[in-house]
Amino acid sequence: MNTTNLIGYFSAFLTTLAFVPQALHSWKTRDLSGVSLPMYSIFSLGVMGWIVYGVMIVSWPIILANIVTFVLACAVLCLKLKHR
Amino acid sequence: MNTTNLIGYFSAFLTTLAFVPQALHSWKTRDLSGVSLPMYSIFSLGVMGWIVYGVMIVSWPIILANIVTFVLACAVLCLKLKHR
Image (cartoon, rainbow over all chains, first blue to last red):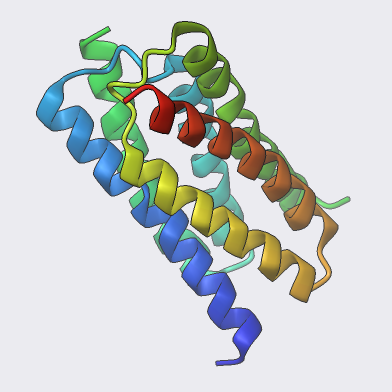
């Protein structure tokens, strides 16, 4: 794998991984007051779009990374809808 | 522009746009308790990686979308560091 692809995969890994501590924090504290509902609504929709895009260009890294992000973002969105 | 690219650009637009309401919400309320510091630290680093990747493959949509996302995510990160 060349340096460029390595940076791309590492960036995808980080921007996906980032939602793990947020989902855990929201789950544990149930403190969702500072979390924006429009953000997670728009973001989840956008990530769903990325999954469709990944399927259309048959890119497994895009599909898999965005499925994980989608699950995590939806978890935060559901907690926000429940505890707002 | 074909349908595939249109979906890609629209998804990029949404996942960037999503951080606008979060940054505004954090700025207005200064309520950052529910926002995860590790999330915004890891996410900002990942977005920085995407900018580098965009520069390396010379993709202006990736560069521009991620510069906007970086500014917004860093704003939330700075507010979190100030009001935690």
